[in-house]
Image (cartoon, rainbow, N blue to C red; front, side, top):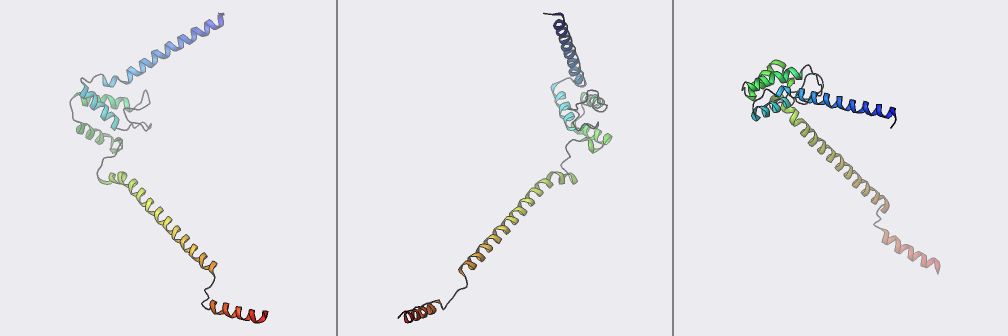
Length: 180
């Protein structure tokens, strides 16, 4: 091996070691808000609540899944949430506290009451009405095409001639007279 490849190899190993160190540091730091929780029940409540609150930093994620490592909103929020869960407050009390503090915009899924019900039922109503509209349009097209077929059939037949037998027999009779 030459000297250049040995140096490149050392740089690669050092870069990997530094990367592993920092990734380990970041992952352990991200879960440090949960370290103060004592049992599985508290951990479960913390995870459920942090997944139900929307981060207000602008990322569009929940508190639990905020992608910013040093988020100015999620990190203090997790610490405060950990304190409430650790003190044994109920889920409803915690939600009520944070909604009073930050407003209902904090809740990632709207509650199923009042005006928020429109958000749950409106898409279903729109889909049903759209289906009915499409059905009506298609039935009008089918009816129009049926009428067009009937009109064409009438045009192909021509006007009905009730006296056609009489004229046919008269034509034959005159033709025979002419021929003879």
